[in-house]
Image (cartoon, rainbow, N blue to C red; front, side, top):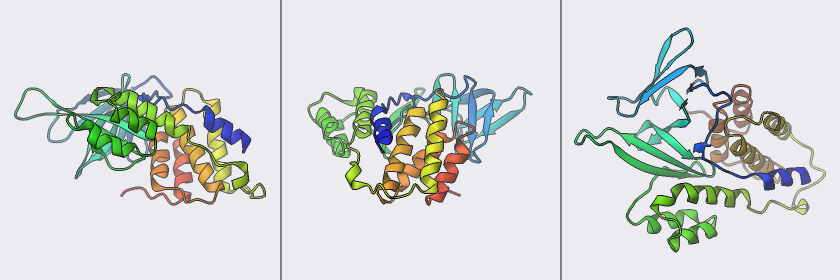
Length: 275
């Protein structure tokens, strides 16, 4: 348990994955890729335009020059250059959004063609704990955003006193993610030392070992945080919330060798993929 607590305390959610989702999330390879809804990773030259109609289309051409076109309904994510995009549900449809930060709080940028203007429409969105997507307003920013940050009052206060405003989304998200990562962990007294590790706990440890041995894994720090949170809830007898399972599956998708194991773990804990 001491090892687990040390690992959790060392975690820093730099979510520039983000850089993108991730700081921007760095892939295990420098090659661009597309991750399909079937969890297949297609490597090659990726082309994308946010302004294609009627559907946003991303195209990947492999080394054999075979082209595959994907829409937000057939691709979960793709990486092009240093930018990572996710397929995100926006109201009644899915669309690609650029990931700026990911973690407990994720920040996305959505670019969309505006038929009434030559200038594209650009909006910022945030999502907390895999919850609802929230449009970030330029007006009434403090009034709308501060109440969403109640789990980290220090960050909420920075919004209230205008330390963070609309132009500080990335800094705000990184601050919030670090605050959440540093939340107090259960003491040894609250956990039964006699409780044997379950298959799920052992599986989590295998995944954490993989991450320790593969420093360049995409979304590595976010995955470690997610796995440690799940492990803590299992050992304390708590229910693993849906958002943690969804985060585990989503964050593991870009990396072959871990995505199948993560999906199996999530499924064993009750995760059901959308059909």
